[in-house]
Amino acid sequence: MKTCYKTIIVSDVHLGTKGSKAKEIVRFLKQFQCDNLILNGDIIDGWQLKKSGRWKRKHTRFFNVILKMIESQETRVYYLRGNHDDFLDQILPLQIGKLHILSEMTYQSHGKSYFITHGDVFDSITTNLRWIAYLGDVGYTFLLWLNRVVNYYRFRKGLPYFSLSQYVKGKVKQAVSYIDDYESELAKMAKAKGCDGIICGHIHKPENRLINGIHYMNSGDWVESMSALAEDHEGHWELIFFNQLDFGKASEKPEYLTRNSYENRQEEPLPQVAFSSVNDISFQTRSI
Image 1 (cartoon, rainbow, N blue to C red):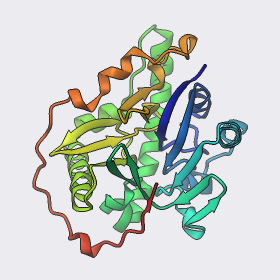
Image 2: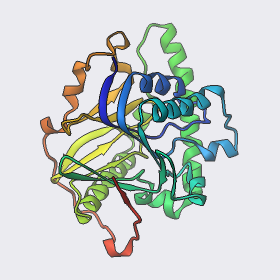
Image 3: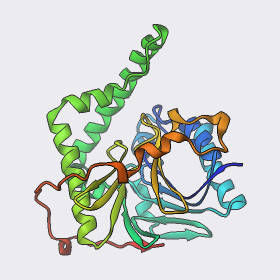
């Protein structure tokens, strides 16, 4: 028996790159059943595929699992566009059976509404300064390569995994400030749209907490954190980390899931950050 959820959300798989944990996410998805699967952007890394990226069999296997979920479990799949898979702009919106390809959406469950977006639209760098975004992508790719080298030698010495990119981002004050502002802007947008919460990806930082009364959630990524968001049939949201799963007990709900419940987290005040008027932004959303 698999653990059943109402909704599972994953983002930033970056298929087509060396850093993508395609095998891990395939194994992850095989452990669960869900009514809704939301792929929240950057599933395929079109930027890297145009340069040095390679499409492998394990990347195709990911979509084979998705198709099997649609066929055998009748799972509804929603693929939301991200900045790395912006090639989807040419076909949006599109529905093929239970597969929906959208830019963003509004998700309603248990009397609450959540605005779901990849999040790059709130990133002024990827939106207005695309060349800097490409430069940052090159730098991040280099950090991931260096990270593999560092952890190879750490593994040989019996040392645990160390995320070099997370360490660098944690030490750079501007990066920390950017993430705080990013999360705050998203929370403000959710409140302006009359939603109870907002769900995003993009910055590869899994999160599940309250910001000034708004339930802010980030599904993380499948390059380093290997995390996903899951909603049970009672409406409770949890962060699931691949490295903390016990695959020998797939039929049991992992104990660690209860540690990440946002009800147990202290609410944080919303900083005052400049934000353009909602009327200046045109959103085409879908609701489920």
